[in-house]
Amino acid sequence: MLYAEFMSAVLPPCPEPEESLTEPELLHLGPAGDEPCLRADAARNRARLLDAAARLIAEHGAAGVTMEAVASAANVGKGTVFRRFGDRTGLLTALLDHSERNFQAAFLSGPPPLGPGAEPVERLRAFGVAMLGRAVDELDLQLAAEPGPDRRYSVPPRRVHHSHLVLLLRQALPDADAELLAHTLMGYLSPVLVHHLTRQCGMPAARLEAGWSELVDRVTSGVPTGTPVRAPR
Amino acid sequence: MLYAEFMSAVLPPCPEPEESLTEPELLHLGPAGDEPCLRADAARNRARLLDAAARLIAEHGAAGVTMEAVASAANVGKGTVFRRFGDRTGLLTALLDHSERNFQAAFLSGPPPLGPGAEPVERLRAFGVAMLGRAVDELDLQLAAEPGPDRRYSVPPRRVHHSHLVLLLRQALPDADAELLAHTLMGYLSPVLVHHLTRQCGMPAARLEAGWSELVDRVTSGVPTGTPVRAPR
DNA sequence: ACATTAAACGGACCTCGGTCCGGATTCGTA
DNA sequence: TACGAATCCGGACCGAGGTCCGTTTAATGT
Image: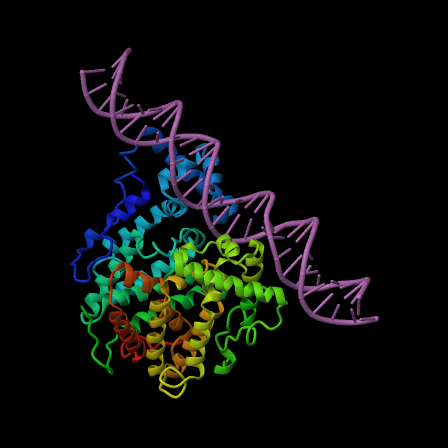
């Protein structure tokens, strides 16, 4: 099964708003362990490819990661790369998989304030800080791994993050439209925005974190004036 | 001069946070009128190309707009398309130009509540509703015209919208980090998100509008608890 | 009208992501 | 060990975006 196919199959196409999700269910666990159900040569080539891709990135930056380059650097045919990872995005995503798993483990079952145990608002703050940190660390890779416009919101990691935010927001703001609010918050953490602000605008990371904190404060403080907010449907 | 080059030259690369912008200065006016300083054949071909592109979109959808297809449909060489519009994004963007101008005119100098004269918060609400309306109308085209990750935040229309929001937010929330808040709000209005929510998730447009209203309410209501928010730098 | 020059033209050409399918390899089974 | 079937491999192939450069053409000055 293609990585991309698997990724798309993990979560339902679009979470029903009222569907109750318990945290453990959210876990985006890839093929358990390290690809056990792959044929020997397939597993070998997969490892080779990831290795070659990482090497190419280190040498020529993410832009230098051509599918053909990766293939030949791994002594493998081009078709193999696509069969294993589906497309370029899939390959780059696979490189981020470890980090993503660690991160998910951290906010799903790690210690507070990121993991369960802290107040929802605290967890929100911690989530944003962690995301911003990752974004800064892996910026090049995350940018290169950006999916096309169609998939951008369907990619499993994003769905998991979104679901997590929805959960926290529902706890903090029972009357809000958590779905939409979560999308809004995710937007702030988008690698592309982070890249623009830090690299293209020279904004210090500290300001981004302060901005996140401010955003969380504003969003989670009550809405004293105006019509009482209610999530339709 | 290439369309893309022109577009990039209109506004400074990244607006200084404290730079004071009066609304009229923001106007993203393209080459006055209808491309006056273009050679006759160039202007003719430009018109042909836009026409051909529009026709192709009407017939085969945005996906069918191949640069070669447009070129040959306009009886023009492929190189001409690129010289005139820089790249595919430039061509699609040009197709949206009229709508964009009208919209900018509306919120820069049109009647309230979108234009000046209404309260900032009212104008924010109206801005979002208008953007959502446009997004729904021109969804296919706006999606296809989505720039690559690097340019996404540097494209003039986006900059103008952002500056506008910054202006309104500064009026409504003198102590907030309007720059970042504006980016957050813009994220909610992104065509890609709108597409995902309406087409892929089947969310009714009314809910998106309600969500915008809620978002504006939350963001613009004071921040009663927590540390007083202050824009660093 | 004519020479000059800057701009525009056009299509061959390149790169790269993605597809396809005949042939090779691995794995379960006897 | 032998064998069949499922899986995987590899590289030829395709389409589309983008570049290049020799040629043509429109504007300008004389």
